[in-house]
Length: 314
Image (cartoon, rainbow, N blue to C red; front, side, top):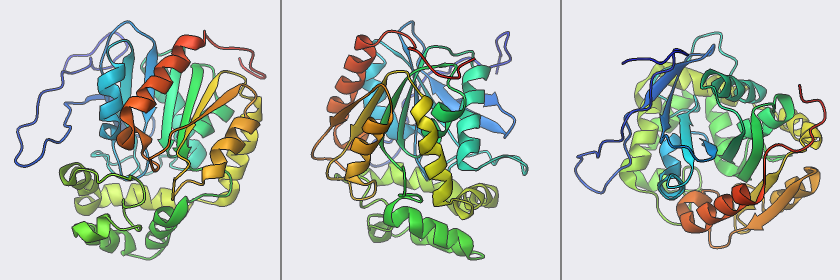
């Protein structure tokens, strides 16, 4: 694959997947080399405002497909797959896979891709929160949607179950093999409380395949899950007080994994935040209510202009 002057492979087209059964979002991904390892990403291209979408644990960037399909009409959408279990390339053994390490990884990704004035859009995981408190120079706006925060870390029943499995030798392997059974992955221990409407089986199977088949990927996720501590998230949230740029908090009041009151708490904590609650949804609002989610992001980006005052920015 050819590379540009920065050493970053160009964005690749998105061919349609020819697969049996229901359609599954499959992309031909570009790659960028970070200090932690190789990160795959999709870039829609275009001259509009730049949106960078960050996914949660045991998912890849395709979780955002319904929203990206809408917003790509007037925005440049970049969707990386972070090493949270659905990635296909294991990270280096010395990679920092802590919560704040994921924030630094995201900052390095923005730098390597030469992105500025970015709107960072996060769901489920806390990488964007960690970045906002650590290194916000390239981030013009932040969209935080139904994600782990405050005391809810690891989040809910799925997060705590994952950490427990990672603490037991061989536990993550057994847990992921159990997810081959549809009833298990649709249960509250799996994806059952993350989306109010059933996720496509083919899509979830693809998310889980690296964890089920690649010891290196399991090692990456186990390192992250084993070291997840509530004190880390509380520290990350406390640092958000210095993030003065516009923030949109999108929350699901019926969420069963991320606490419904945490959206209001984040909006009150961040100096320049507004709150939008989207009903009839669980954590994966972009799947349950993609049109409402895309509308909220589009309106937010259009109504805010560039970075505002930010204490400590360099």
